[in-house]
Image (cartoon, rainbow, N blue to C red; front, side, top):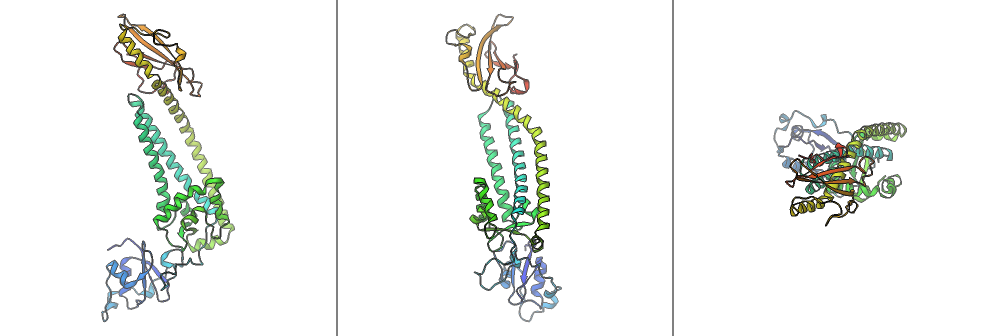
Length: 414
C-alpha cells in the first residue's frame, strides 16, 4: 500500500480535508461520521473520485452495513482540520458533480511581471552556471585527452559534441521536470512564491510542460516581445503560456493576499533581484578571472597543433625524399620543393627546410614552421621547429613558441 503520497477527502459541504496519511484516511472512512457522497483525491490523480472506488483502488477497507466502525476508528471526521483554502491545488478546487466543470476559480492571483522576471533571472543563473561549468570541464578533458595522445584526435570532436548536446537536454529537462512537478515551480519560481498551472489552476501535464519549455526561446526573440506580452494580456500570459495553455500564479493564498498590497511585495522583489544580480556578476567576475586565461591558452595551443597538422604533408614528402636520395635532406628551392614562402596555410605563413649532421655524419632533416593568424603577438611570428631523425621519427621543439602553447605530445628531439 502506498504510504508516501498525501490524500484528501471532501466533506458534505464540498470543502476538502487534508492532507492525511493513508492510515488517517482509512480511519476516517471507518468513522461513523463518514460522508456517503465523499470524494477522494491524491497526488498524481487527474481529479476527484467517488470514495468507494478510490478506496478500492488504494486497497482500503470499506465499511459494510451493521459493522462496528466506531470501534475501528480513533479519528473523527469532524475533528480533522479542513485544508487551507488554496484553490490552486486540486484537493481544494471546487467539487462538482459535473466532470466537465473545470473552469478556473476566481481566486487565482496571477503573478506580477516583476516576480516572473526575478524568477526567470534566478533560473538563468542556475542554468548558465551549470551549463558553463559543464562546458569548461568538457573543454578541459578534451584538451588533456588531445595532449596526451599522438596528436589531435578527430573522434574527440564527436565526444565533445555529444557532451554539449547532453548539457542542452539537461537544461530542457530542468524546466520540464520542475514545472510539471507537484510544486509546479522551478527554483526561481519557488523563491518568488509563484508556480505554473493550467487554465483551470491545476498541475500541468508533462506534455504541456514540454511545449511551454520548447516555445520559451521564441518568447525571447525579437526584443523579448513574447515575454513582454505578459504585461498586456488579460491573464498575464507570455507567448509560451498562450502556446501551452498555462498560467503563472501566486502559489498560495497567503502570498496572494500580500501580493495584492503591491508596494511591499514589489519592494521585496526589487531587493531580491538586486541581490541576485549583484551576486551573479560577482560570481561571473571571479569565474572570468580564472576561465579567460585558461581558455586563451587552450585556443592558442590548439592553433599551434593545427599548424603542425597543416604541415604534415610536407614532412611526408621530406621523409620520402630522404629515403630516395641516400639519406639526404631537401632544402627550399631544390627539386620538388619550393621556397619557404610557398608553404603557407590558415595557421602558418611559411616553412623553412634545413638539415644538420650528427657526430656520425648522418643528416637530420629540419622544418621551421612560422606561425600566423593567431591574433596574438606572442604566437604570430613565432617559430616551431620539427626535426626528423635518421630513423624517420619526427619530434618537435618549442623554438620561439612559449611552452604553454605547445601541445604536450610535442616531444623534444632525441
